Amino acid sequence: MSKSSDEPFRRVEVITSVQRRRRWSVAEKVRLVEEAMQPGMSVSYVARRAGISPSQLFAWKRRMLEGGHAAVQADEDVVGASQVRDLEKRVRDLERMLGKKTMEAEILREALDLARPKKRTSPLLSWSNPEDDTQ
Image (cartoon, rainbow, N blue to C red; front, side, top):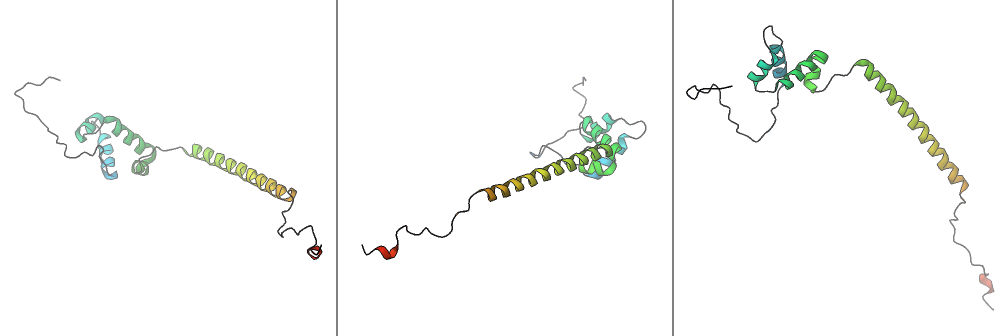
């Protein structure tokens, strides 16, 4: 991109803070994605005008197409329902296994408590008879 020295600059951006990341509201994200989806508009052009990376706008667009408004708002990827069901089944299986192991540990603890001799709570009496001290 060559520019002649006598041509004026079209835009100057002044950075006034040390904040590295801009926060985009949900409405702004949706507006930019909808603008990029208009006929004749490209994601790169809209991203350049907004001052963001095209990959960021592509990610917002993908999330919006996959999960709609809620996914864009949460800024998270959308997971398919089958994957959610599989993960929930795995959690149930793991919880069941944890319950079995917890029960086994309690049974073993009770068995050990029954097998150990009981400690005496009363003090031991002297072997000698206290009345025999007269010797």
